[in-house]
Image (cartoon, rainbow, N blue to C red; front, side, top):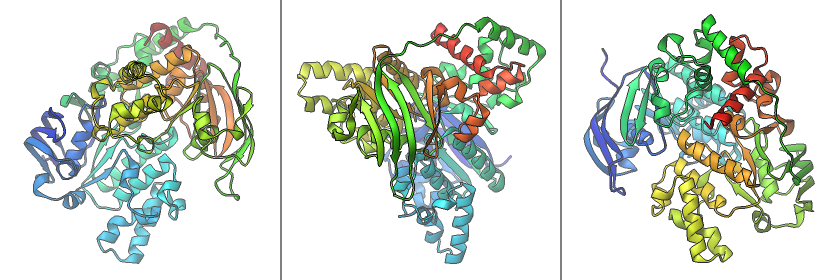
Length: 569
């Protein structure tokens, strides 16, 4: 058998800024050509494992290690981060922190240029790789002009130009729309097949990663490896749910129907399930038992009205075209669509960061065109997609408290409200920490807390659960749901179809600046034509229902959601 490419041997690590070790007794071998998924809740140590593999530890994040780590047969601290980059190529979770060039083309060309590749050959390499990741039409763009998903593709291209032995992806799907996420997994799979490089993926979105086969899953919790086993064996057990990781929806639906999940079922992928007549019968009976009359939601008074809104960053091209819809008080709505569809731009227009070319935006019946950003912020809270663009204080407590201090709220009331919000967002244990010590997902929770603490009339969240593990995802969403029950209006821009299905009865769908639909969340993911147009993907519940002979997948999906809500799951 070949020697491991990466070998952790009773390895432990403690960051210099921390009082306790982050990793404990890690024993893990990754072999050439393997595809390994590392999963775990936020703070479980999985990103630290990645930083050890690519050399960010110890060169960027110093600390104390125990045991031994070999990468390509060498100990990282006896090598250099430059040498390690020729063995391990990395796509970081925070893509903004990875850009070097002034344009997309320059950024992709950085590594071959450093290696003194002749210019003609370098251009060919850049064009070939850019085409593979579907970013070839943006080579002259500056990084800040790209959407989150487009930035992710540039980062993918940047590591693909190197002939590395291992490719490390830290949450590669965090900023991608569903179809682009599927394409990214297909792309990673294709690169793996073509290069034979080992692939290590650190990701929360388990079902999306498993769109293509993985050799095994390494499950982490509190800095330790809890389980390391083939995918089928992991999914057949209860390891994931016990340790705060969401299992694929189709498996949850099968469990609800009383189906035992075994390795013989081939649970790795919904299209590969071995469904016997007995299993199909169980699913159909469960579905029939759950069917009830669809409840009509009570509609509140109108809060936000958008009429014939048009906007473009340049006069030649509109980013949003003739957009009209209404949000009512107490609504909980998802805004979904492909990367670059105009979803985040719409939020900026509502908050006053940008001004429309034409059209009206009204809140509680009044025209917002004359209101400043600060005046709008008193009623509309906005949580941005990238937490680094929002945080301005070095300490977590100060960041969350900042708006309350500026409002003149008494200290005792401020303290009570900040403490409550930090507990809800899972940040209370870190209240005295510096923001710089947090992971990307933890920073995201800080920005959500800083808005929630103000209790605005309406909250717009751009990808609220990106980078969140299932437990923290659920805590944040349940808190938002509770706020919604109290009358707060919640609007979420999201790529997370689970979120849309479970928490928002209504979804507004965008594609290329146009509004395609304003309908129920279940309908969105069970309408193949709409799914294709908006760059989404059918839910695995759709695939499962069709495979079980249920010809109304939308109703099956609604039964699934209703069952979860009824059972409080």
